[in-house]
Image 1 (tube, rainbow, N blue to C red):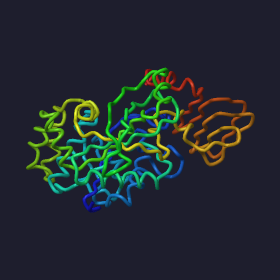
Image 2: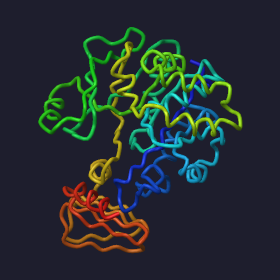
Image 3: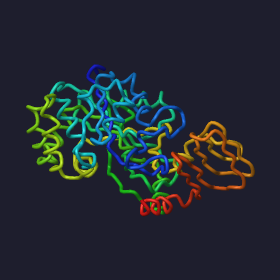
Image 4: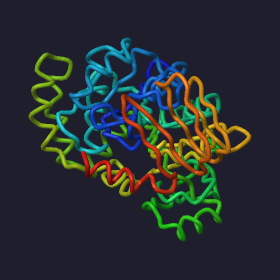
Length: 356
């Protein structure tokens, strides 16, 4: 595997506003310092690939309205590597766009595709897994997805059913996929957890550029024709104009439905490196270090008394004092304050969304 052929494709077009009041549709969670560490989620995503893919081989897929914030937070990304979607069309069209454009200059490219807003705790193990998967796909027709070891019965993730009976001869950590499962109810998630062959679907993919382009040609020919038609104008001043015209004609479909559930040669790399897609305050609470009273405190000066099992995120306040709460979210951002039970965050988010 030639590292110079490694390319990183980051999908950053989502409108994730589930960390209200910090995140909104104008500034979704990938562009926010959710962890209070001085780096936004998209910056942390780029950071953990710095020794895997050359900086000049990093690509960002995002909506046009987020162009300025991407350039501000990732100033080292070349302008023509920030691919701007004129509208939301799920993950298959954006992956197709990046794949055809990359292939136009480097037909030997080896791609890792990742969301921009995930949490990875063990970055060293993460890098090892990605390198191993990329070595596997560099000279093969394999499509690899990362399956995360399920540690509790999560109903907010899809699952991968992996055939663990026999590993691939060329990589003993990679196995064939038996099937993909939709987000389950609690009873089904508990059943998955009791079995050792069901893993969370991370949405992180590894493949070489010819494999993905050929697969889209086979399983999504109308979409393939759109991006094939654009070959003469990639890297020219007409590219954005044509993308604005043709991208909205793509089917609004995820890569899972468009390809993963249909193609042959689908493999999974079961892994465990402290992963979460950080979809809720509860998931952030579950993945962060807690104090002696099971509180997660993110902010410069937080004092708690008779308070337990809470997440307090107050990075803009000089001092915060909380007394007498059990199992609550306390979060502030730009003159907005949220105080609600952890178990009620979805209902409160729905209410806030309706109010907006």
